[in-house]
Length: 156
Length: 266
Image (cartoon, rainbow over all chains, first blue to last red; front, top):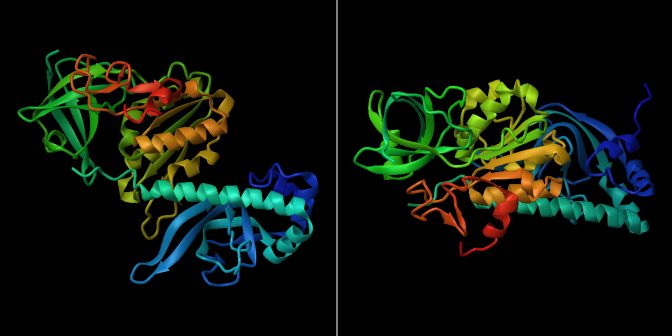
């Protein structure tokens, strides 16, 4: 069986599926296949956000360390999702920890490589910004919904 | 509309503030998934509670009740052998017959799983009549996940996705809002029916995402909660615009609800 290229894998991934072919080829140049075992960190708060990850399999917890409580999971990202947006926004440092909860297969994208492609190719920059803006908007909506604590009881 | 006397046959604590009562009466009480009864705690009062039992077992009536007020606290405090008055069943059912031949996506939040349990049991019992079956369920914490032992059983017959808002150490499941589970649902939106129950704000967000996925408004069903009093469409306490939710609902399609829920004064 023919081994799938990064481009093939991107076409199967919901985040990239409808990218223009020429844009997808450029993006694929900055990607590589990676694996993480349960418990491994994909990114650590405060460290350089060199990569972001398009998950193909597994589950990643977005965590932060709270003194006296330890690592607290804020949300999880599953196959078909994307982990990391700090590669795009200065100072390019991870804001939270990202830890594999289940074994993870992903495509890791080199942030510096993609940023330079975005600078030189407006179509690539526009396509990626649109997707990440959508991703951030969706996470903001989800966070706002959680702030409502909808499953809590109404005060009597 | 006199309450019929029923007796508590069994009482199971589901969550810290929630119990399931098994009631038996002098005759079976056939019902359709999604309907509710008026339960009367003698000397305290009467409230509407969805039926959470198996529609194929009408001889045993099950209600899952959360203690949030005087009557529900009294109901939750009932012991085996004690009596309760029952009027019903009332209201419109989940569209389990209309969904035959289609995929079914069940979306529940918190205690909203209780009114959906009869529909899920029906779907599983008649598994061959349906396409893909998926349940997406959101709860506040892992300790607030309702029917935990049953979820594992349901998983053999359908895709079950569970998420919590606040995890505890060791939780390996999903964390986040229930809408985040929807992209994982293996259903074809063009030939799917959605049944949604939970806090109204959650249902609004879920419906928005279901519409975006491509489900038509007439195939997205919500179970609405209002202050049911008479349960027979007379008193108007449960009125939502022209609809009396006790008899026109509680289960209604989004195509009918959308214009009503967009009016904040209703």
